Length: 388
Image (cartoon, rainbow, N blue to C red):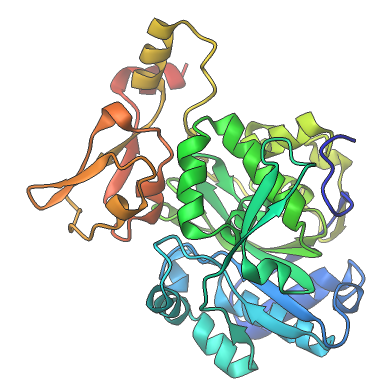
């Protein structure tokens, strides 16, 4: 198997119904999901330092379904502590990293309260590290925050959401949060096709390869995720040791074809999986019985069209690729300007303006806008063709 991850791929994924964020229900569901995989004692031993890594995209209220719900994080922390582990909660929020930004994100997402209740540690320091990774397909060196290699065990606690560029955010994409903020921007600027970005995400996943991947799918987000979509009730907690397998199960749960997601397709090309839910061993509740309908995936970002003739490439980008558009909801906060990898957004007459000639369609502006003031729109011709 080429480009193998540091851990062993697995086809086992546990699925437990969880209809609400009631703390007792969530803890029961997380406990059952982890128990089906052997219990937390399989993954955490006494006195180990354990990184619990949620999705902390923006300082957002949990009800908006943008971030991993704090009750799920709380349940994971409690299980780790029962196994004797010392918990560090950490993620790189999607904004320039400062201590104040981190504290604000933890406070508004409810994670600060969880840390205070459970005596878990919160990371508020920024120390980037680079690691040689000769086994990577695209990245031969992996950039992470220091907290990844200063912990004995990594547990990823992701959120089931859509994503403007990659179509889906789940267990694999959640690990991009281990990459420091400004380095994320450099990756976006350098890796300008969906296929390249998917391969980068798999390299990061292969390097970090959490001991356990738990997904908050109680309420997901569909439509224009990862921050501008709509909360979508799903009612489940998923868990597995293989982040790709967890994503395949999650996508099947919301009735989406897994191989249409770039990271899953890239994992199939690497031989990590088949991309078929039928090849997974689903433990716990029956996925087919609990599958939900109506979940809307976005069209995704710019595909690899470099091999097309230049005139077709220009036409395709103009009509078939969704373009970020600044709406009247812009409040001139400057976050999109700060997060644009190629600096093609400027302040004009008191609001953001995107200059399309240099836009690489990474959708960072859409992803990080706290007002959801940037929409992704295809041209009218592209919308018609997409329905054919």
